[in-house]
Image (tube, rainbow, N blue to C red; front, side, top):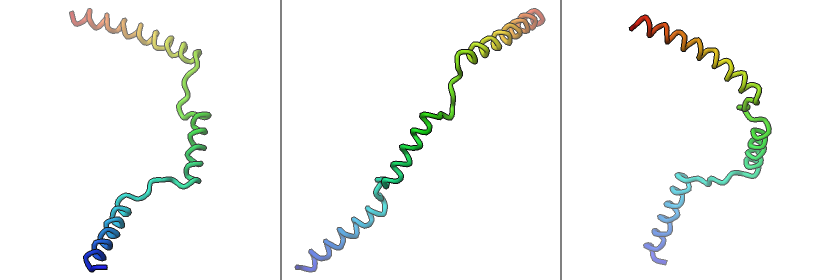
Length: 83
């Protein structure tokens, strides 16, 4: 084999080593994949953010209604004072 061919092969091996260092394998081990599945299932069953039920929504709307009426009264009084 000629020295040029040998040098070319070593250069390509070096280039492959650099590529492997810059872009490592991204496949996860089996244990990490299983852990991801367990975590996703856990979050599906026990979500961090729970949607309110219908009773809580109605209570919130009614509370906002009284605050809105108070705000309208204050706005009318303010507009009378300014005008």
